[in-house]
Image 1 (cartoon, rainbow over the protein chains, first blue to last red):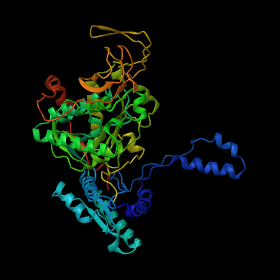
Image 2: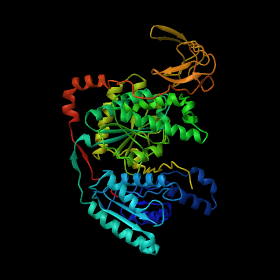
Image 3: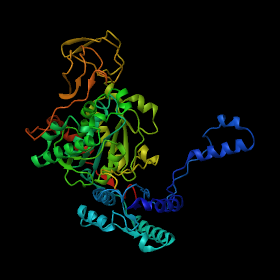
Length: 420
Length: 115
């Protein structure tokens, strides 16, 4: 369920509330019970009891999905679609078209207001650009055509329900590993990321590339300093020139607003050893392994070629993972040294720690630990192979990554231009 | 890079040279393996990753105080790097394993997300 413009966010939220619990997709909120107990303590005049209250007694709700073959219904909201540059609306429509085309998505419902920059026709054009044979159930409704909000919501809910019943008839089918398209992400990096988690992910990427799969390396401000190496790895001059052009244009746009790629490292990065953007980049680029660069994509472009692809996105983790899923990633590998909860609504995100301390401290968000590379107990190659095994299990539905179980559905489209 | 917290005066043997740490180096942080003069480039993995803003002696931690961001310039594709030679060998060596393990099929869909 996606809005074409922020004016429809509230309608999306209303539909979300109607569907989630009734269809058995809601995540339990353990803290509701805690609030209830605190209210009681205050009412009976014993506020000192609050300190003693615990989360125990809060129940996990059993999986009682109405549509067994559907793993979830996701409600994306965003702040774009109107009021900015036409290029931003076009980029948003390309991104949303990519979400609808992503193999993890069985169908979609799109809510339009009517008068906004991001027109339905623009979205339809972008879908056709990506896949001229697009044939998933797609419901598109426009509020200014439907009249009242109740009329719009009723129609949206009925049509979506019927579409989901149709999608529920799909069953898992065997597919070769070459069908995998894996996003390569890092966030909350530390000094170890570049020597443990990132090269391990790089090795996994090399394995997938050799198997005919697709991988996507993004976050262009974090490839600052390794450009020439990546240029030399490009399959041809045209691909190399596109990368150089995108990097220079991006860097210039940062300089135009008085900033620069050198401002990228966060206080957390610096405290843990990544003191310049170029140092951070040298480690970040390791996620791309040693494969040739098969293609370079601008934001919103959908992945076409097997092999390692470079995708122009910001270094902001959520803007980047949002873009990778929109460019076709059906799974995302995310390395971290400090621990970040990032997830994606349609692509499972596997969280990989660069050090064992983090894996022990935040086991609720970390899926895979590469800290044994630091202690010398495991090799990068062995760790990369184990990671590929985990990818296969997650793609097969046998293992649920932590970010999926937590319902961490982060979605932030990139607003590249100014507001008008 | 220090893999564990290294104390002041620790002796490090690195590719035939001996480095004596002139200060404590916390884990995850990098130290210089040679003297770097103010204004000179700092190289990591063969790439320029910074410039010294003061003279940095051998065995000293690099920080935002003594190093600033710097990179090499880039332009046209002027060389073709033969990618993944090690990996090609690996594939050949481990072909048997690949047949058993990775020739497996993965079950994709129904969609991880339904709608």
